[in-house]
Length: 219
Length: 219
DNA sequence: GGTATAAAATTAACAGTGTTATCATAATTA
DNA sequence: TAATTATGATAACACTGTTAATTTTATACC
Image 1 (tube, protein in one colour):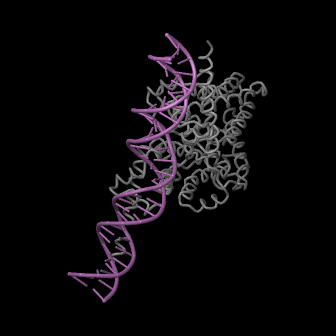
Image 2 (image 1 turned 60 degrees about the vertical axis):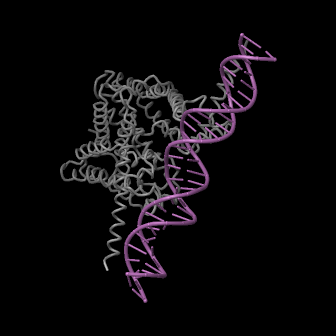
Image 3 (image 1 turned 90 degrees about the horizontal axis):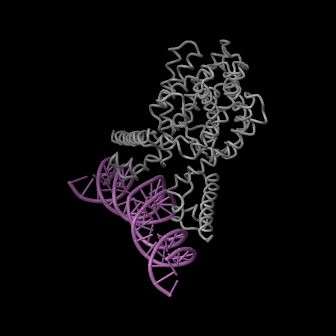
């Protein structure tokens, strides 16, 4: 009788509207500065209606994190085709990664913020099946594939070709990259050798990519 | 007549008590989970009394950040004497840095959290004179000195010996290091090649330090 | 069409937050 | 002792995330 399908559709529409409002507000003002009431006001519903679609604010957060990682993946993956050499692909990917973080700092922040909560074993078991975690794994997969190819082509001489070593080296690349982005976003660059902060950030980014890839390839 | 000195002393004692309570609570529960009322309760004063000593919660925060950077500096600087070779000194310093972050994750968090606030030019002018900023510069100075010596001894062949280049390379080292710490503290290590998270973190740390220093020295 | 039922959305409230204005009290100075 | 000043506390404001109870709305059945 078609009505329940329509109602289902309307429900999903409202869910999407909530996410859209939340995303725009988060991107503009940051996670902590956006209240449930503000989100509700924007979609012209009462605050409690949101709780019919999301368990709590954290669940909206997690959903947006997933969205963020998916966006990041979609930005990175074309480079697999565009750039043949895995090392150069890492370089280009790193720049794209940085671009993403700069364009949407609040988004990046909610994706990688240090939560400072000690992860219990059970919490880990739970989170491994979550959509936002899997989306993170997918984005990380870009680096893994580049490193994998780099080792296979003999361009990364350090360690063996075991999965353990590939994952380790991928994490090395990722942490170095995340380090730059994190410091830039936190405005922690100290009296860098040029005036414009934007130029300083790019200088540091290039130098860090160079250094990391040099360490990786030994070239 | 000595009374005003005593009152001054009492005032400073209370100030210290507030900081001590705040620090303990922050370290235990994290910045966001500690309220002014909780701090007040611990020192057995009313919440408003705190405002006679600190403008707002942010000022307590900033004071503790300064304390954190000073602690970090004091932990790093002995290595200038203990380890002669600047590259090996960087390696040992990095481990100490990591140890500090692991021992007091909440402390590290408030020191380096991505604020996601766009720094205006005037805000920069203001912050440059702040104590917590200068304390940060001091800690950063550990890396700068190592890099400086490394270049002088010909162990870091990349770029010239200009101050600009030294600062750039120092930032490269720092961001890579901060990247590991940041990811570890955020529990963002994905299915690493060993079971115990602590061991995974140390593996990644060592690999990142190796890679960064290899990139730096070209060895 | 009218009515029972289920869904959707709202109101009111709780316990908490940072912060401020106002008031009381204690200590120092004159 | 009286005036003044510094110190601390009370009460309140405008928020926060979240829940229980309630009302409105839409569907299904007779």
